[in-house]
Every structure is written in structure tokens, then in C-alpha cells.
Image 1 (tube, rainbow, N blue to C red):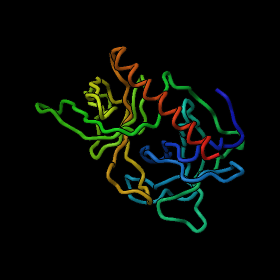
Image 2: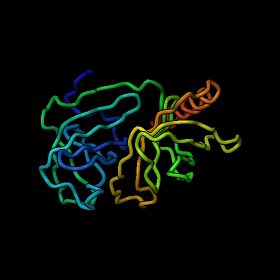
Image 3: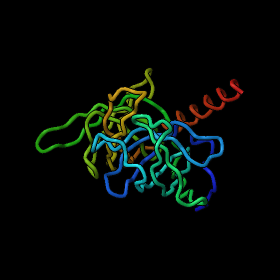
Length: 226
């Protein structure tokens, strides 16, 4: 674990998980980051209450940036002027940004359609979703309906339009509501983290190859823009 004094610039638009002290966790993402790295602007309020988080309330923020997960304790600071569905987070401790983990496998922010199936009583429930990120060990999904936490699921992932969908077994680590995004429609209301189970090597390699391809494309775009 390492400690940072400012938020790395790479965190712009990264997915974030917000854990309020007195409410349920929810999914958000970084909207903006001032040049001095002293605070960051996040999307959405408390989706359980349908309101903005109270000013001054304590939260923990977990921001994913590639292989790193940055965690810090903070309190809610209003925007100037306060914009609906947006809020600032500023650390309570100037040296309070902690890099707490590196992912077991490479993941990349790849968007593709997913069909998730799980047993709900005597019937088979089918949930249509979309990946937010994908890797050889698991995925993050967004869906209209929640997936039950800890449940085994069967996924069909449309990784490549020219090839059959991948068939993957997984289990749901957790599922949270998505913070309201003022710049996006509320097509998906829930976000789930899943871990793959007994992934065969051919499928794993196909996923990792797509992740590496995404990295190459992303670096090329940065070079072209620069």
C-alpha cells in the first residue's frame, strides 16, 4: 500500500464507488479534477434517497484507475454554484490517498452487450446488461435490474461481433445503485462486480487479447492527440 498527497491526473472519468457513513454504497464516476489535485468532482447523489448527499457528510471514495484502486476518506463539499447531481470530494487528510490494491488480472474499460441468467425461485431470470470493464478474472456490469449478491450467474458476452458470444460462469460479488448522471440517460440503474468461475484458458486468452488491443488503441489515440 502507498500513500499519495494529491489525486493522480489519470483519474479523470474513472469509475468510483462511494460509501457514505450513514447510507448504502453507490456507483459514481469522476467528472472533473482541478489542476492542483486537491479535490475531485463526482457525479450523482444518493440514489436510494433521490437527493444530493448532505454537505459536510462523511464518505469513503474508491476510484479505479487501471490496475490501481485509490481509497480516501472525505467529506462532501458543494459546487459553486451547486449543480444538481454533482458534488466535490476533498480529503480530510492531506496525505490520505491510499493505493490499496492491484488487480489480479488486467482489466480494460470495454463496452459490450451481456445477457446474464440466474435462478430465481423455480424460474430462470434473464437480465440484459453492458460491461463497464472486463478482464481475465471478472467484469463490472451495468443493468436495468439488480443482480442478486453472491449468486451464481451465467453470462453471454458479445465480445466480438464476428464471433459467437462467450459463455462464462461467474458469481456476483456485490450490486449497488448507480448515482444519477446529469449528462446521461438512466438506461441502467444498477452496477455489479462479478468474478469469473472456472474460466477455460481459450476464453481467458480471448478476453485478455481484447484488453491488450484496447490498451494499444488507447495509447495510439493519446499519441495522435498529443
